[in-house]
Length: 381
Image (cartoon, rainbow, N blue to C red; front, side, top):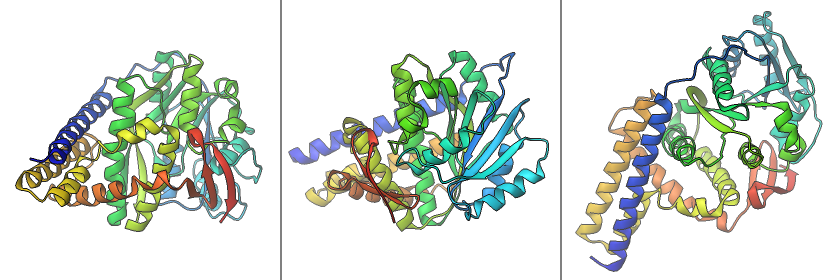
């Protein structure tokens, strides 16, 4: 075996081991015994920023109005008064008159991040000091808010965010994105980083006190970054505030995605991750062992390289199957090698792009990124 072949085999073995450790960490987190509900459950203002009609938006919003929680309100809004999501929000709110709700449109701006601009407009209407920031494309179980509150009480405050899985995916792009979320993202961010005590957050649904938020500069500060959820976690941790993840699953509802749409979304977040932490981004190449093995096979064209490539493909497929089964996501077993091939090729090729390009398009804006995903330039597209 050539020196290149031996090196690639070692990297593939390391990648498979890391992927397995991530799946184990995710499983431990998901299966951990939830903390008991605290005696006192604070009133919560749920901030729900909207942008267009996401897949299954009505059902997603209905789930937030059906929480098993004694006292909360829902504040929904967009930047654009003509956004069709407003009609859906008003309809769902009218179906649940027992839950206080406000639906607004406000184009106010505090920074370059359009989602944070929306949140800054919503928080001004909040009555309670505890905030749940909840994306429009998530669907939650009735016990979701109680679970977050219990984890937060056990931690002594700070920020709590929820473990999530990609569901309701359609099309090839949807299948690839759900697999990426359920294995690489959840295993790496919520599982391994959680075990290593590295502060991080994926803000699909996160609970935080307004006082803590204002202590780091509030939404005007977070509006300077595209990865505002991760920056929020880092800033709170730097001030000694706890940052924890709750294992009660919520659904990230994906809907139909084409391969082109998946590639565009993956590339956008690859650019973000590269600017959030270059060392972590460099390690990602090892977490794509199938791509490394196939690249080695293309270069070496030996029986040994073919064996390594086959091992990587089978190993990653088995780990993905196991991780998704633990999250309650079931696919036909024979799909995993095919999806792994598509995922590893897409991730491997696009991994290089963020070193030469730092501009992303998100929510109708073109954003140039700097350190920590700080937005240095924003234009409408």
